[in-house]
Image 1 (cartoon, one colour):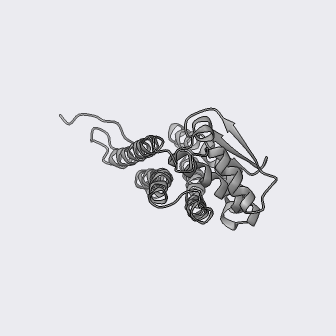
Image 2: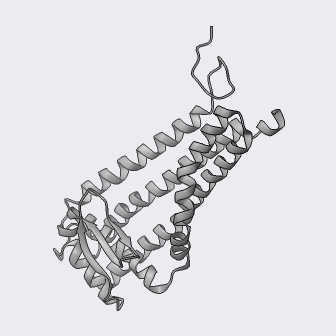
Image 3: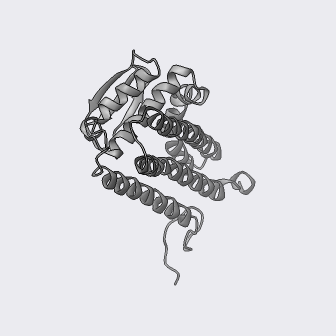
Length: 239
């Protein structure tokens, strides 16, 4: 007898669409492992100038004529982010206080977002406007799909899939925002002389690994969407 592994509509057969979910999970784990190992490696490489991530952030912002953005420390590991609502560059404690190449790269990246905000960078504005829509999509997608399965109503499943698409679109919009912030960061670190020589290449590796996490997350969501389409795309015809 063929063992039962679950799945929708496959009865006793193994659901091959689980391979898509598995591929996405493996990709996400690889990205997470890469960013953590790369950051740890270059967090032990002290920059030649010996200034902390917080000092770098303030220098870069001032070099662009930005004086109304606050740089502050937040708890957690790699919790760094820029908040356009409060105009704050929030750096994790290790990035805030360390003079390493890794810390400087991450701090500069978050400054890249502040510079985008100051310049009215369109993809950043689009992402900010899309946040409530994406949050709605991520909260409602699976409950609607599960509800549709339980009560046997295809429209709920279809709406749930479209909610999932909205969340995926946010991830896709995020990609150019993150890549652009990293390019701005590396260029400014080079132009200001804060990093030089091989330090620039090392910072690119740190930021490249961080960017890969966004790519991996988006790809995992695409694979999940493909699975949903395979499982439920023909239900209207079958019903």
